Image (cartoon, rainbow, N blue to C red; front, top):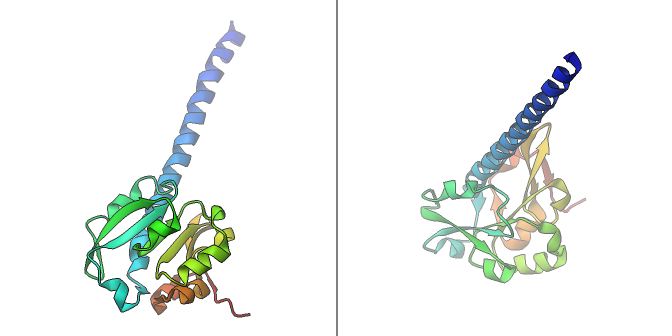
Length: 181
């Protein structure tokens, strides 16, 4: 009887323990998404766009690919960047992103760096990616370092696109790629 009691008790406890661990991971992921979305808004205020890009009705934040921010981008709606209201939209290709100010590349591995560079030379759009391995595609890369969200900045891509960053933003970056070795 004691053996049956142990078996009957262990399985439900393990199930509860596993659910708690999964909830913790989900909560951590949600918090990371929230931090990244908040960073995006702050970053956009420390980027200098050409004057022609400011002559618009809205500051457009676009996402190419699936929503990797778990709906947290919507929190930027109602805020403003260079006195323009922020709008959020999804795009299916780079050609649809020409009016965007900030473009999140959810699946950066699908975009060849050479094609992106050519497109950026004709469009002043800030590109954002997740992961250190995609720094050649994002002017801003979100990287987890010691379980904290950090920024890597690609100055070369920004220059191609006609964008510059405020010194304040560069100071908080944990790595800066200048393209000059």
